[in-house]
Length: 206
Image 1: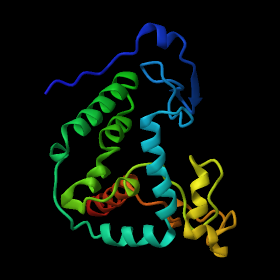
Image 2: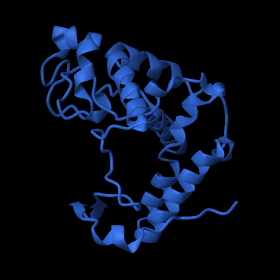
Image 3: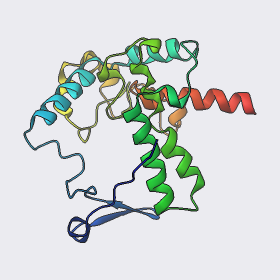
Image 4: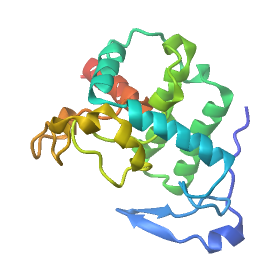
């Protein structure tokens, strides 16, 4: 299989401002000149994305996420390789890894991160329970505390049962300051599943 890494055209690249995040330049527009994550434009695609976010923000509760972590934390669903994914997903992983290797040739950890960053989407696979899209993709946010207004499509949280739980409606919620991310329940999805996988591998290799 030939993997093609698309190059940005000169006209869009010339107008592409970058925001510096640490030592990495983060582009504001993609290779085709479109803004990243512009959820305000009306389009059929954005309508589908918005519906996914609506369901995600309604059903992602602290109880739901903890149940999913318990279920998938057993890591007993199936054994698969990266090549068992759908070809478009494999292409995406390889293209991302190759693009980052081109731009940051000495950041080997980043190449690996790019290659595996979306592997958690196997949750959509029938062998893993064929989870609905709203609990696999989308942004990750903390649960058990007030939903931050900066979360995309924050308005949908008003229908989330946790928003009516007084214990969850303060800035810290059920947590205390400086307890660390390891002790915070995050919304469930492909990123959390990969975290479980990587944590398990760390324990096996240590």
